[in-house]
Length: 455
Ligand code: AMP
Ligand code: ZN
Image (cartoon, rainbow, N blue to C red; front, side, top):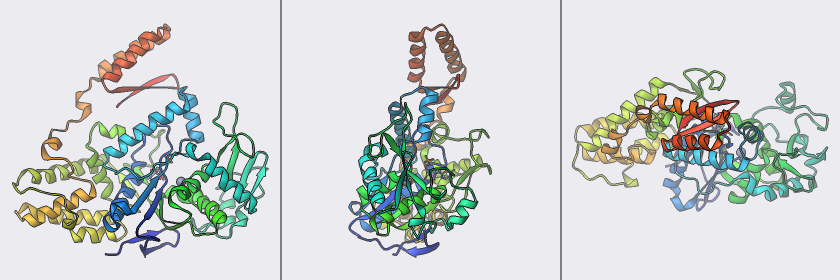
């Protein structure tokens, strides 16, 4: 069965043929780590986890390399570190742990490699030096910039001409740029900012170069699939292509796959609108499989409207499906050959998860009538998609964390801690923070306000 994926670069659905079927290679842009991941960030995690599972199924688990990076140097990280008064390394370590917990909560398999930007500065410097040597980049005021007019294909991914980009002011104008659309490869670090020695002085990389460097290191100069959210098409992915292809003179990624955006109850998610939902928030009320299933109900390229109603419906469906595991005596075993062809066909057609779920509903009906073959197929198809991975008892005895917590007590302890801090009794303030931590409550102090979250 051939897989077909929609390639953003050519704007067509194409049959997927790997460059080397003994090592199929996929790179996905991972999180920038400074806070909890929101439910939008979970979309690429789940979408590309399904693509990863499909590749493993077809080519064998040992013949697929999935790389998802971690951006651990970035303006947003510096800002968060300043406002929280927390060291950058402690902040990134803490939030990487959150991200790992969240990704595993929604049933995502671990990628084969999870490189961190700050571990690959020499590789980035190496590419920048090559780009300067080939006249694709230039130094100006301690910055190194990529000269976009030296790369003919610039704009091909996002479908934008240089004129459009400049006219639409999607680029930052600066005196030191030869062309307003030129983008930063390296910039000087201000005092108290992270910085590395380089041929251009102490500085730090621009955002885009890290993915060119890490994908090349772990997947080679050309690889099969590059993925990420739709917002990354421009400038991030456009710039990655320019850097890598100008440097290596080779086609960078064969397929560009982008997930659509997620909104909440019909509105763009934002902190100011107060509709910002983290995976960590959802953990209080829903099992990870509910989040995963709810995400799969919408095709990955479509906009996804995340609603409480649809989460509740997803939970009801899974509650119903789990019951079937309890109602029969037949031992169910995990066998890839038993995954339904109809479901695989749906996935093979550009990861059509809503169609796959429609097929699961049909299979469930037949299985409920006592058809053991259908039950085995239903069970294995669900397993493959990362649902029904628990047993009926653990599923039905799962309790929402919010039912167990005593918000009054938490607020009282926060008040006591604030009093202790005002009285400069930091030992007592720390003791209260630890007491709350024992109750799985994490405090966050920001802008003179203390908020709490469950671990
Ligand atoms: P970031 O941590 O902001 O670099 O984003 C990590 C990943 O989440 C990227 O692939 C983004 O494109 C993706 N992403 C961010 N917000 C959303 C959203 N609202 N819906 C879907 N994907 C998103
Ligand atoms: Zn990237």
